[in-house]
Image 1: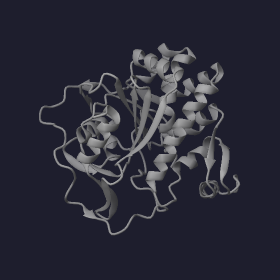
Image 2: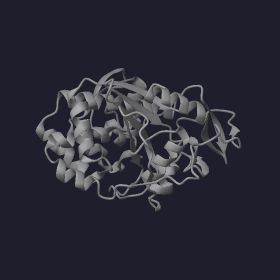
Image 3: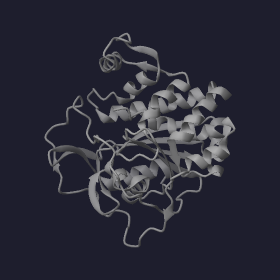
Image 4: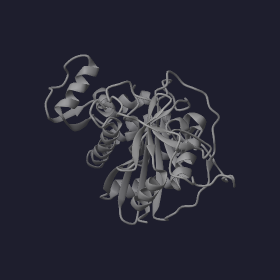
Amino acid sequence: MKTALKVLLIVVLVLLLAAAGIVWYAVSKMQDGAVGTVERPENLEVIDGNRDTSLEPAEAEPDPAAEEPGESDGDEPYEEQLIYEVDRKDSDVVNILLIGTDSRSGNKEATGRSDSMMLVSYNSKNGTIKLVSLMRDSWVKINGTRWGRLNTAFNSGGAGSLINTVNLCFDLDVQYYAAVSFSVFEELIDQIGGVTVNLTKQEASFINGKMGRRVLEPKDGPVLLDGELALWYARCRADSDGDFSRTARQRHLMELLYQSMKTDANLKKLSGIASYAVENVTTNLSLDMMLQLGTSVLTSDMTIESYHLPFDGTWHYADKDGASVLSIDLEANAAELHRILYGE
């Protein structure tokens, strides 16, 4: 399923619009259908309690080579939910949720599950970007009302539902997002000329297997990957860490893309990327925020830190109706996330 790497491109796409010189047109197009905000209902509070006690601990880890969980056979309709308004916890920190949906229809209005979810936290005071992959099989309280996999929150009410779920479960202040469907991934990677990745022999063999032919030497070393090959690299989860390794590859590619665009950007490349973004990215970021982020991130030396949630030692595999999920300690994860994002 061509979903994994698209989320890696969203921040770069949004920030580069200013440099491409088409921000006014792009912003209006990208904000078409963007989710608005509404005051949070009084009866919805941050989750009290650390996990769903009805889950049964799993006797063994799931097979990482098995079919990926949480996939959808097609687009499913949902009623869009507004984003509940939350005050910023730190004026120096802005959090943006990047959402990659598993829609197959190839347009930004399509529905589907959020196969890739990455929180990008920018701290303007200390010049850091924190990338936090949100594991899609985390068992959380959706919209503060029912338990389910995190990636089903999007399918319950779009970006608003997913953001509200994340904020309620982990006491966060996410108000902004960018979302894109899978079909544009290969074109976008090809637009920037591919990306060079230090592959392991195992990863190269995995890519060859998915391509159905030997396109890469099965050995350790740097390889320039085009869009199709990079997609398979980002999807690779055929090792003992399964989805944790898959999301680590996504964050690594995000860092590589950021460095590539800072050192090797030109007007032709930026314009090509921006044209894809305009038609295939939906965001509620304002023009002022895009300009501010673009100026700060692309003209400064940022320190990028990489994490995954749930954090080590705060979760275990569990069984839910015969399916494997991650039973996570919500309170422990919220505390660690606050330490990383806000220094609390």
